[in-house]
Image (cartoon, rainbow, N blue to C red; front, side):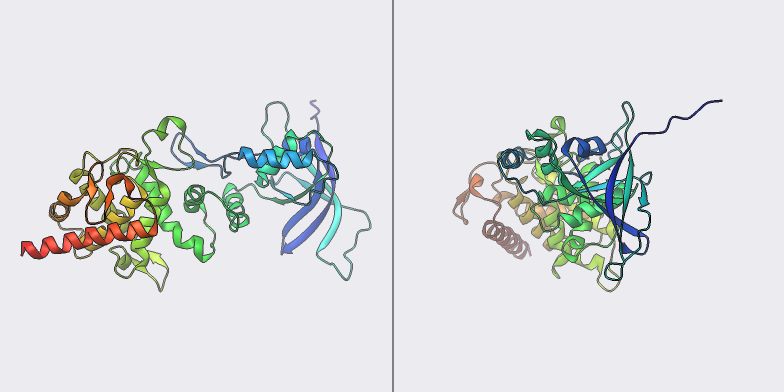
Length: 382
C-alpha cells in the first residue's frame, strides 16, 4: 500500500472578504522570499503558435532601484500591497468560533493554506500588480519585512489579465503593452479601453497574417530581439490609424460599426485596410519596410497621414469589385510624385523629409497636404 506524501503548504493568518456572492479576497502578509516562492511574474511573450502569453511589463530597472534604496533606509513604511492570483488548490480554514459581527458581516478571519511547489514545479500563483515592488523587495537587504498581500483565486489567465488591465488603467502602462493585451480581454472594459479593443485586435491580425502587407513589420511588447530589426512600425501607430477611421464619420471604416448594437464588421475592416496598404506598399517600394529614421512612411506621422488619405480613397469603393486594387493604385499615383518619404523636402510644408515628427500638428499638416494634392490631381484629371 502506497502512502501519499502530503504536499507542503505555506499557512498564513488571513482575513477573507466576500465582495460578491461567492467571490472572495484574501488579505495577509508575506516576506519577499515567500512572495517569490508563491508567485511568478508573467512577462508578455508569444508561444510557437503566435498566441499571447503573459501580461506583465518588462522590469523597469531605475524604478526598482529607487524602491530598493528606500527599503534599505531607516524607518521604512511600505503600505502598498502586492496583488496575487492564486490557484483553486488554495484552502481557507476559518477560525474556530468565528462569527460575522453585525458591523462587518462580509469579513471572516482564518488560515490560508497555499500549496508550495515541489522540485522544479512553477510557483502556484502570479503577481497581478506589484511586479516592480516585488523585484525591489527581493534585492533589498532586509528580507524579513512583512508585506501586505491581497489575493484572489482563479485558474483562468484571462481573468488575471483582465484584473491587470483594470488595476493599471490609471497608471502609466506602456501603450504598446496595453494595445497588445486588449484583444485577449473578454469581459466588459471601460469605454476608453473598449474603443481600442477592435483596432488592437486588427493590429494583431495584420502583424501575424502572412498575406498582410504589415506581416512581421509591427513592433509589439512581445516582439523578441531577433524580430525587432524587421518590426519597424509601432503598434500604437497602426491602432491609432484604424481608430481614427472607425470613430470619424468621414472615415472609410466608420460604416462598418453598428453603434446601436456595438458590433463591428471586422472582416470588412480588415479587407479595407489590407487592400489599401498593399497598394501603398506597391506604390512606394523603396520606402516600405525601412526603419522610421530612414523612411517617414513607416513613421507614426506617415502611417496616420496615409491613413487619412485611406479614408478619402477607400470610402466610395466597393470591396467586392475585382478592379478595386487597380483603382486604389491609380489614386495613389496621383500623390506619389509629391511624397518625400526617404529624401528631399516637403516644400509646401517647409520641412525636410526627416523633420516630420509624430505630433498632432505635423500629422495634421501632412494629412491635409496629401488630401489636397489628391483632390487637385483628381480635378485636373477630369
